[in-house]
Length: 270
Image 1 (cartoon, rainbow, N blue to C red):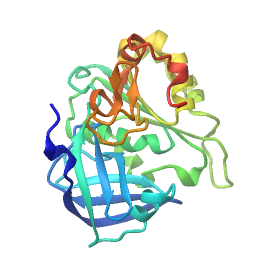
Image 2 (cartoon, helix red, strand yellow):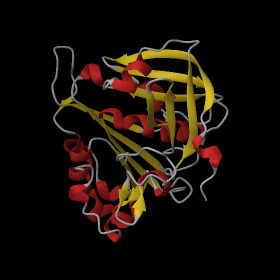
Image 3 (tube, one colour):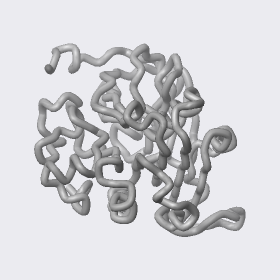
Image 4 (cartoon, helix red, strand yellow):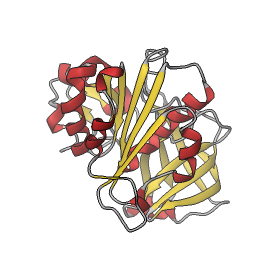
């Protein structure tokens, strides 16, 4: 049920910012409502507009978001500093199926900024030591300098295997070079029960093509942020077959998308 309060933003103060890599900033907000991993918020910059952003933290007193400067509202938001205020609505939507994944073997696959919502899952895993039997992260970025949260990898490795790859290496990079699906050569996909995927549409399409037939459509989940606007399924901008991404997602299983008549190959094209 849609409530009037869902459309009214609360004031939140920026208490910390950090440049993670060129054009991408981590912003910590003083905001009381916490999200489940995979849920999102509508962030307003007064006088400029509003945009949906997934939470990139879990289990902390404050809300963290990760923003790429793509012009417009995102550029203004990236240039704001501690002490400034924004409007926040949410959390909204359905996040990752963490309860259904308890005790299972978990595969996280991220590309570029898609690591941001999965970081909230990683935070959950770090705080719930016996949550799953096994966890692995496969993460790819265009260049080494665009890998997010680099200072946190050593902590993550205490809980999970972390595999990294970049499209283009520099002289300091000693890791894998290629696209994220090439990291499948380093694992056995059949060793995992559930896959959580977030990244550019073309990446997700190739990932699904290779893993869903092994892990299963019903156990392969994608995080989508497609044309979301109001956040509560009212405006219709994010209609996806029988679903609204903002209300029924943004996380969907491949099985759900197919049941809605949505071809995975077409996700994110419109």
